[in-house]
Amino acid sequence: MFQELEEINKKPKPFEFYTAEELWTNQHTAEQMLKYHLNESVDLSSRNKKFIGKSSAWIIDHFNLNEKSKVIDFGCGPGLYTTRFAECGAQVTGLDFSDNSIQYAKKTAASKGFDINYIKTNYLDFKTEEKFDLITMIMCDFCALSPEQRMQLLSIFKGILASGGSILLDVYTISAFNKRAESAGYEANLLNNFWSPDKYYGFLNVFKYDAEKVVLDKYTIIEESRARTVYNWLQYFNENSISSEISDNSLVIKELYSDVAGTEYCIDNDEMALVIG
Ligand SMILES: C[S@@+](CC[C@H](N)C(=O)[O-])C[C@H]1O[C@@H](n2cnc3c(N)ncnc32)[C@H](O)[C@@H]1O
Image (tube, rainbow, N blue to C red; front, side, top):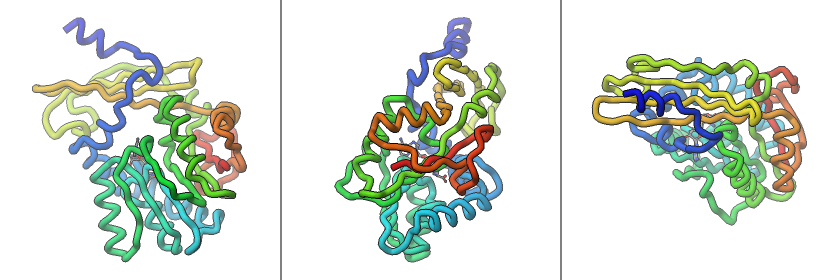
């Protein structure tokens, strides 16, 4: 018991373990995630419906999306953005490794008569000869990746970006990092059975890495017949740190906003959105 508690409370090295696939594709948690995506009033998994409406309208207008535009959305979830991009006639591709979300997105496209190319894949392995005018990655998914994975992803972006095209992504800021605090605790059925329909004890250890500007939410889920650990990493950025990462891939920040709805940039905001090219 003592050894197990030591393990639960152990602080790993930044990005030592990658368990995003367990979180997004485990059948039970994927169903919970889909419920969050589709809950129109909360900012969990996807942002609320009002924001997505405002944000997609801004993206369509700002990047002048039309029948000639080729758009690809990395981590498209159930297609809340891709569906709207298709509504303006753009040729749209959506990537996600959650089968649940991709199936939902495909059904929505079929019901609306949209020919959206949904691909179930880990976007870090994505390969294509196609080029895209706009690449999107929305809701700070970039922050969940290790420095090496971010480099890999930026290199994929660079390889598939059409000449004169743009990448739009959002990230958490240092202002948000400063609001996070370390903690440790546990609860029976932590997060209202999010992790399992059966009884479990859920431990949540929050670790901060001040030098790296990283936070880890480490979940240890103990059921009667199994135990598992899920590591939710978040990298927080300022203008310089994100700029230096993207310049390593010969990309530059073209525009900076407070969010993916084109709100004016403010350093105190918890998120920032970047147009890169
Ligand atoms: C925070 S959600 C955002 C969904 C969508 N962009 C939105 O704003 O509605 C992140 C999405 O990325 C997907 N995802 C996370 N890591 C991935 C990976 N390595 N490959 C493919 N999809 C991934 C998840 O399944 C999830 O649907």
